[in-house]
Amino acid sequence: MYSEDELIPISALQHLLFCERQCALIHLGRLWAENRFTAEGRILHERVDRGGWETRGDVRTEYSVLLKSLRLGVAGIADVVEFHRAGEIWRPFPVEHKRGRPKADHCDEVQLCSQALCLEEMLKVRIECGALYYGKTHHRKDVKFDKSLRDETENTALKVHELFEKGITPAAVYGEKCKSCSLSDLCIPKSKSRYRSATNYLNRIVEAEVSEHYK
Image (tube, rainbow, N blue to C red; front, side, top):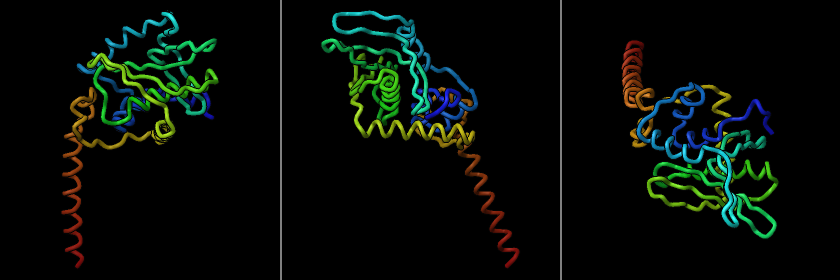
C-alpha cells in the first residue's frame, strides 16, 4: 500500500507506455507543450470536465469523478463513469474520452483499466468492463478488464513508481510516434540520437588510438 504522498497521476501510465522519456519530461521535468493533437484532446475533454451528473433510464452518468488507489499508488480523474442499473444495484462502467483513433498498443486500455481498479477499491465492487470513446471515429470501443490487462496495468504502475523514484529522464530515441508528440521540439529526439551516435563514434576512435599507442 502506498501513502497519499506517494500517489502518481493515472495519466502517467498512458504516458509511460507511449514513451518513457515523454513520461519523465512531463511528470519529472514539469514540461508541457500543446500541438494540434493535444488541443483537440483538450477541447474534447472540456465537454466532459464540467462535473455533475445526469440520469437517463437505467443509466446514471457522472462526470469528472475523482479516483484513487492506495494499492496501485495512483490518483486522477475519470472523464465519465456510467452506473448501469441491474435490479437494485448500480454497476460502475468507466468511459475514457480520446481525441484520435484506437491505437496499436494498450496504452489507452491500461489507463482505463487503472480507473476501473481505483473504482473497485473505492466502491468495493468488481468491474468487468468499460469503454474508450474516440473523437475521430465517434465510436466506443468496449474494453474487458481481464487478467492480462489487469496485470499489465499493475506492472505499468510499478514501472512509473520506479521511474519517479530514480528521478532520471531516459535518453531520447527517435521513432515514428515522435511526429505526434507535443514535446518533440523540447525533446529534440533526432538531435539527441545524432549526438549520441556521434559521441559513440568519437569514443570508438579514441579507444582505437589509445589501443594502438600501447601496442
